[in-house]
Structure formats: C-alpha cells, structure tokens
Image 1 (spheres, rainbow, N blue to C red):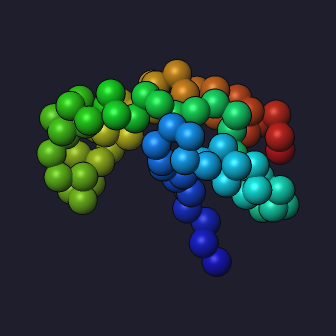
Image 2: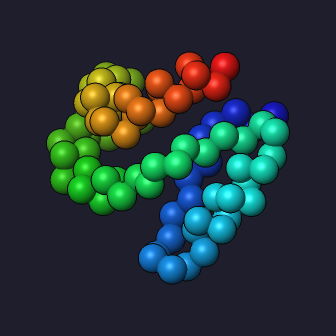
Length: 82
C-alpha cells in the first residue's frame, strides 16, 4: 500500500485546486489548505546538499526543510486531525 506523500504540481489556473478538493474527499488522503508556492524558492538552497541518495546529505536536507514554516503548519494540523 502506498504511504508516501502526494504532490500536486501545476501552473496557476490549471485545475490543481479542483484536484486537491477531489482527492481530499478520500478518507485516507489529507491535503493541507496551504499552497506550497515556496518550493521553487528552495531550488538553490537544496542544491547545496548534493546527492540526496547519500544518507548524510538527505539527513542534512531533511533538517533544513523541516524548519520551513509550511511543514511546521502541516505538523500542527496533523496532530489536530489525529
């Protein structure tokens, strides 16, 4: 069974909010209300971590990304929903 994250990516006015609304109707899918428009701004900072298939690089990247406000909000909502 798939347990990973689902990323909905698209251009403005392409139907991503409609898709998010449809997927959110599923009992085993939870999608936050916030948009993750911060992702393109992370491209340069993420490149400094190198090959993310190397565990040490991935761990450093994970520590960095977990401090982004978007993920802090998701964590709070996750605890509320449980």
